[in-house]
Image 1 (cartoon, rainbow, N blue to C red):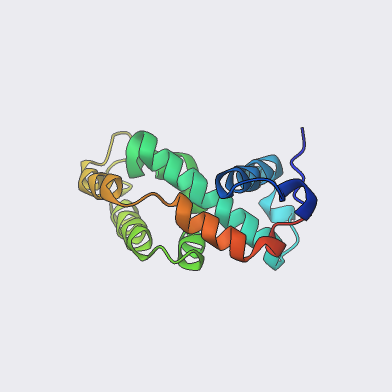
Image 2 (cartoon, rainbow, N blue to C red):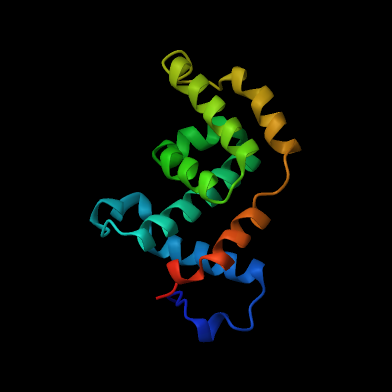
Length: 147
């Protein structure tokens, strides 16, 4: 089923359901494989950033920063941009610090877990959930996500 985002179909949805619909739409676009073919416009960029933040958050919660960089390193920059947009400075700073460690040490840790990221994983788990930040941004900028 294709996600369709219109004012009519989101009228009775709560913020969590709208957030989920945005992620579903981003997943359908499958940014990992077709991002080079997307029009370079504000709507696609915003959708890509929301999608990237969800992938970032999910992977770090599941397996730490190592897992995120292993699976989705290409989503780092759109996740960073998204974190800036939703005003999540603690998450933004932590992701940047993790990326700096990853970049400087990735040759050393190509075949094993980078234990130098473990402390940052713990810091991430202590932060507040990103969903309210993302949902607030989506609600205030809903026109960026409408079909």
